Length: 341
Image (cartoon, rainbow, N blue to C red; front, side):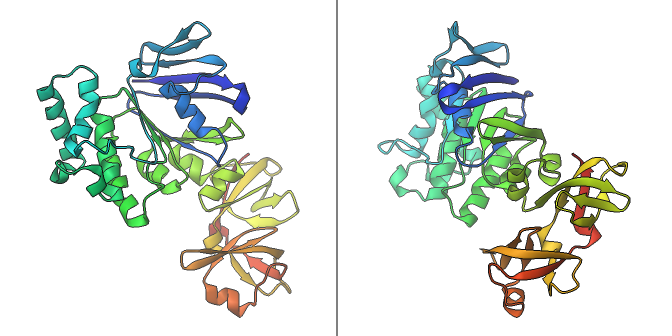
């Protein structure tokens, strides 16, 4: 089912326009408070906007102020961070709840439950109750329950954020299998979720969509600082030079352009911190001041007032880096991607 949304909620300063093709998954990204969950609430019928219109396939979900479909008539399923399983029901009965609520017979509902338990690898504990499940198992059951209701639109509100890394990877694999060909909006803070699960990405900031497009293009050629941060990149604005770009602060970078761009044209550059090398500030092509040191897995993100670098802790120790330290940055041409602003 194709989806079109154009709506605003003044109290939360949210005004958003989105479209999805039939069977497409859209990842909705943005910082906390950007309005992502508000958008899901509008689509699910839990939040009533002040004005706007939303359609799903040929049906109008709302066209305010005249039309408002209640949640149970929309054919929309919302899966949140918490599985919210019924504690008194077995896994099988939890999964069968949606079809039964929609009028399916007991046999039909059980058949659908068994099918979705098989597809989500939850059939092995069909007779257990939620209290007997691990976090990953409960979330897979919640996915099965949502899909057994055969929704026309699936809404996922950070379904992996409460899981540890190993369990999240397992549930992400389950989602990858079951979302194919299903119209879905996925709210996430994780670029990996977007890469592995979404056809397109929309980035929200301050209640507005600030960039949108195919997943790889948006995440690898960001136009907004939040998108760059999410992708692990540093975003630089400036103008094209014959062999690179010159930033707004006068910093020059050599780089590879995605297309032919005339010198003097406004451009953006995405810089990979993992390729930036800090060193002695004396004689360096780019001088900078360290503003923060942040552990990231087994590396340290060295934030400066010019560019970030991602280096081993030993390098930080050898250079005696501290907040406020002067440092020189060396940036290879291959670390810089330049594209039109």
